[in-house]
Length: 494
Image (cartoon, rainbow, N blue to C red; front, side, top):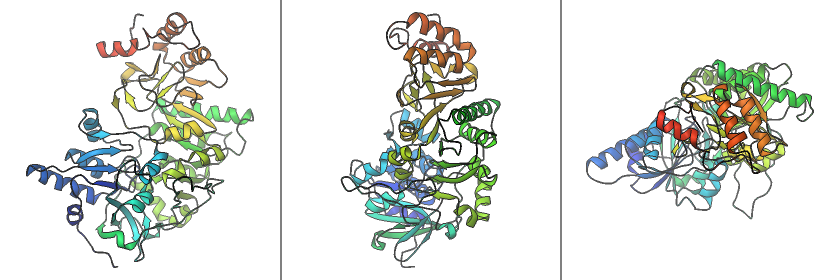
């Protein structure tokens, strides 16, 4: 192979303070691992010597501990975008020590291409195979790796033998130019392919290869709880009722689902529902529940950006890769989340909320309006453009001290015009065709925890009873203020 073989430390030595590095990864799946750890070690050495060392970091979405965690711990990140989920990095962001800007995942590639994120000096990409003429076979995610490889001045490959080279054919790399040269994306069903199985890079840009054998840093499958099971059952029952009413076809529409144990519970419930036939997924993250339903014949085909699977589930896929390759495809996120395709396919979008207010506005990113949790991710891409947009959340958190249903959300990521249905373990609020006050009453009676219904009724019926929308500027954040003062939202006296 014509490319130099480098150690992680030699690769890290190529990267300098102030540069911007784009890394592969969408969740820990397919994220670069060895080189970021070496960069973090170099940053610590530079800091100990009294010299500055920080880099800008662009990825597809969140990554693993070896990337976001190690770099954050070493104070090696000057800015980070578009999404993260690492506890150490989150703390630095909320303390104002690391610059972070949240973005819709569908727009990241465009922002890289048009230069609004600045020059990308290096792309560090995990691959399972590479050819002498610059054909790169990615591992378990695509993210924005094709765009990063296209615009970066130099490319470094982490060639990870943990993932088989026979993954070739799992990916569909379709790259869009900037306007005005864009054409329609020829995807008309979840299983369609529009691009190439590989990323094609000018070999002169590839400055070296770091050989690794490291598994993805994905965690074990989180088991469902009675609350998440009930949320899943209610979502499945709602979709079944839409099929009976003729608003969703009997053969079902493609489903998008967020990440986490609630999303897994929703998928499991849909797979077990007798009135829901087998269906396709057109989503971002393919989790364990999707593979389980594929094995049962309930999911016909799954299109995503990453295979974010527990180690045992990934091994199951790799042991029968020829079969799964016919039922799975991984795409760049600007294709998976593209509004044109989401609207064309009629996606049933199910995403998770932190808090939901009485008008139907959803906060999915910030705690008490100021501290970021992870980021908006792709939820907005699917919510605004989906055939049906559903948001799910447990009705309470912190042992009941925090209500997910509040008079006014402290941060709004998805407004009332995009959110159609809200589901908690207590019920479903279908807000289509409802006025703001009708929506508020539905959310209170169907979705709020019983402990919070009296105070929310009082707010809606007494304090905010006049006007087109149920809102009292004086009282809208009383529950949040009471929590800050007492540690519990309960007990508010209006």
